[in-house]
Amino acid sequence: MSPGDAARLLLLAGLWGGSFAFMRVAVPALGPLWLAFSRVALAFIALFALSLARRSVPPLLAHWRGYLMIGTVNSALPFALFCFAEQYISASAAAILNATSPFFGALVSALWLGEALTLRKLSGMTLGLAGVVVLVGWQPEPLSGMMLWATLACLGAALCYGVGSVYVKRRLAAVPSASVALYSQLAAAVVLAPALCFVPMPDPLTPLVAANVLALALASTALAYLLYFRLIATIGPARALTVTFLIPLFGVYGAFFFSASHSPRTRFPAAPSSLSARGSRPASGRVWSGRTDVRRVPPRDRVPVRAARDSVAASADKRRCISPALPANNAA
Image (cartoon, rainbow, N blue to C red; front, side):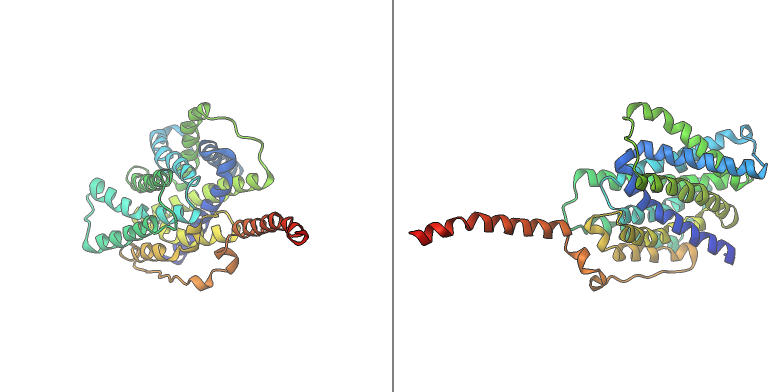
């Protein structure tokens, strides 16, 4: 991998890692479908404006079937699934589950392209999937039904990314990456638009939500897909998908710093992330390790503020209930 591709991979990891925090903030206000549609529609507008500024709008009809396929599998479905999931699980959990994309990509490559599943690849899958098992099973509260559906939605989105990356390499290898990025977002918007008729209109957005939607569309989608499809063309789908091993690092700490996730799961991200990162070695030749140290978590995050405030209020109510009885006892 050249230094330029390595820089693109790292930048892409940061852009997509931040997307989980952006979704976590925006999805309660817009809902999954409206947020996914806004993301792809705004991304298409930005990319189309960029093409107009460059005076190089690519043709649409020559590869419209491929654009429709990749827009559906690589944008519309996974975006909607992740938006649904982040209503019930933390941003860091969604980012770590997204790290299973290379494993699905390897399976799709084996079934579709006939690439061998070597022992090295299988060991990487085992480590990565072990990280997912640790993440899903090690929870401070019982795994509810909706959390289970949210986990399955994230895995379904990861499967979509695996299929999409192989499809681009197989059917759209000769198409410029800018064209794929542009028209895949248009196709995703067309696919999502009919579903909006069955969900209520969102309320007016606050400045914070609007800023997160714009960041999600412009940075984590428009710019990110320019980088992503360029990487697929230069280093291949398998190595391009290793970006998802880096995404949890940005997703976890993005959720921490921006307070996008209030779940206790965010405090213990390193164990499953470490296992998933070690699983990247067979695909990329590099390994990133992590270590959990609970003592590094700030005390204010280990004790929920609301619980402390409720405890103080309960103590005050108890004193008010006891204090009127004191004068009566003295009088007696």
